[in-house]
Length: 293
Image (cartoon, rainbow, N blue to C red; front, side, top):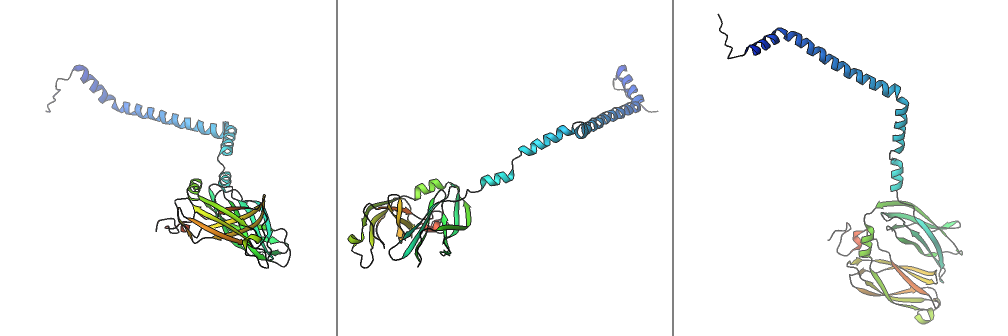
């Protein structure tokens, strides 16, 4: 005979336990039934939702999808916005020297402040003839002068067109502040000597231009390049390109340039630097990556 120890259980607790034991099978069936009802209700809710989306509200949903697609950011438009703007050719001039040669100069503007032309090819076309191909760069926002100097021709050339090809763009960040720090040149003591005053003329008229270049920037340069224009009013009557072996920060250099043409009174001189400051090799003390040697 087993011994049952109730451990001070009350009659009510005994009745509750007895009721649970005798009805637990029924309670289990009731629980399963409730869960089935809940699951069925969820399935019914999902089915109603699918019917509403694909049948009842289909036209409204299609209109909403079309509107969302229409307002979605157009990747082609974004790519078009981020493309560099085309170069602008402002003018092309043909200058004849008294030795029978011609100088061609085109003023080309890069309107992009975040894009540089890493390289391009160009030549001049006049009638059935054309010059050889030259390569150049154009810095962001730069007004660049594309030159072809001392072209020999037996035919008179009054006008020419520049042809620019094979443009390679390069994205550049914060170019404006770099240019402001680096391109600090002063051109002083300019003196224009006509062929009579230069003492260089013999059979041909040879004018002479003297001036000083002062490098006011904190940077020193290796073989910096410059372009010199002679202007009569707004018209360019002479152009040449020249370089110096080096130009140390704070250094001043005197230059003398000869033109094989006469220079009348009132002719002015304009000099612009033509230095690719995005190329580290142009700086003295830096390698071609822009790092200190």
